[in-house]
Length: 112
Length: 124
Image 1 (cartoon, rainbow over the protein chains, first blue to last red):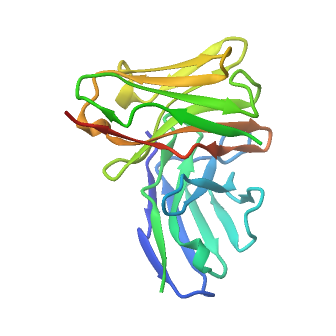
Image 2 (image 1 turned 45 degrees about the horizontal axis):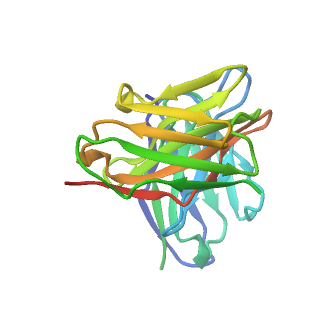
Image 3 (image 1 turned 90 degrees about the horizontal axis):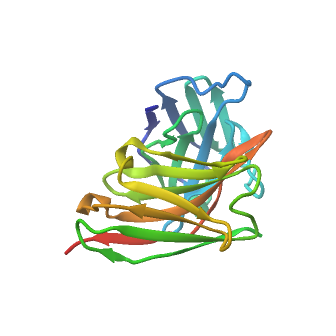
């Protein structure tokens, strides 16, 4: 199985300040078709996860532009340019290049 | 607008079978470019993909190694549903279970639609 490792596991951020989450995969997520199968999800308290970013850096419909994704191969980053109170929750990276599809452990974002 | 509605018991006894059904509205269980999945979440195991079903001239099913031999996913085109059966449950199967759509498009591959989830407890 591909292991997804996120750091840090928790983050406390002052509103308006940036935040960054790292995700490393145990194998490359670059497919032979040139796509990199790395997604980011946000889970707010009491809700199911919702997609933020697909294929490393593409914001899903309706996602604010303060969220951005980057990376390649096995190293990826989710950045929030200016954290807002509504960004509280747990963020997960996930790979879909190889079964079983696997998720990172999650990074809990709190507001200071 | 695509929506998923899950039904099933909240409490199951050890050794029994857990059965959950996901009803799809706004899409087709046999549609092109979609894969239907079961995912669970627990404090000990985090988010765990369990299995999937999709149609491409025939039905295809894949399962996580952790549930192979215990889990069956079936699609019912007449009711536009897909279901999960997990046999011989133990307390380790206690989790929130989600049914989830995975969208497969040329430049968009992701879990895009989740139901609200069902908290399933395995206990006598």
